[in-house]
Amino acid sequence: MNPEIYGKYEIIDAHTHIFPEKIAENATVNIGKFYDLHMESCGCSAKLIESGSKIGVSKYLVCSTATKPAQVQSINSFIASECEAHSEFIGFGTAHPESEDIEADINQIKMLGLRGVKLHPDFQLFDMDSRQAYKIYEQIEGIMPVLIHCGDSRYEYSAPKKIANIHRDFPDLMIFSAHLGGYERWDEAEEYLAGLENVKFDTCSSFAFMSRERARELICKYGVENCFFGTDFPMWSHQSELETLLSLGFTEEENRRILAENFKECMKIK
Image (cartoon, rainbow, N blue to C red; front, side, top):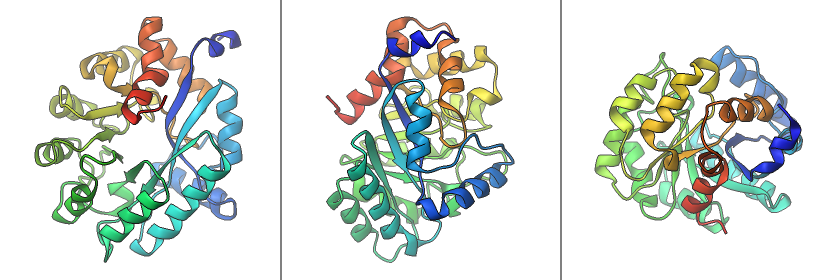
């Protein structure tokens, strides 16, 4: 693709992962093993910015996941420190349903100026519509969004239909349903999630597993206005994900919305 096309659009990456330098390489390798996938890069801030700069990314949603309750506050402090060091970062904190004090964890996220919560039910080993998980949603409904990993053929923790249950019980909770609503489970995602108010979708970790026709079909079914561009960095390269999106046949205005405008409107970014 002609590099000049990159400057045509403002681009926000609405789904990335970063880790402290000393563990970034091991964390990246372990994620690759979990999914049996090749990782395009190492999950540290410098590599993220290096990759994104190739296509002109202006902002990045950055997050990391606590697999144990004891990790929550240290991870949130790390994400906040990286956001302070990099003005282009928009940080989402982590939470864990088994935490002894979820309210304190959410208060820390607010105090640090983080803009949302990221959950990964398959890593964290909880059903995202469980009673314990609901304690998190109770704290953030109407206040900040939750980005939830959705879908995996191996597990039921993150089954897309459970997003519909959460939406039913927390209608004012803004949900970012990752991976076009359900990694490896897109038929289920389409059945249960299309048309739900306050449910948004990012495109990451989807294009590699479906035809371009199917990707376009899903985005249209959810509504272009409800979709965000994301890479799941360090899993995929910015260049390849952008090139796939721009090959789907959307208009310039539709591409503009997916690449930045929808996310800016949702997060109230000027």
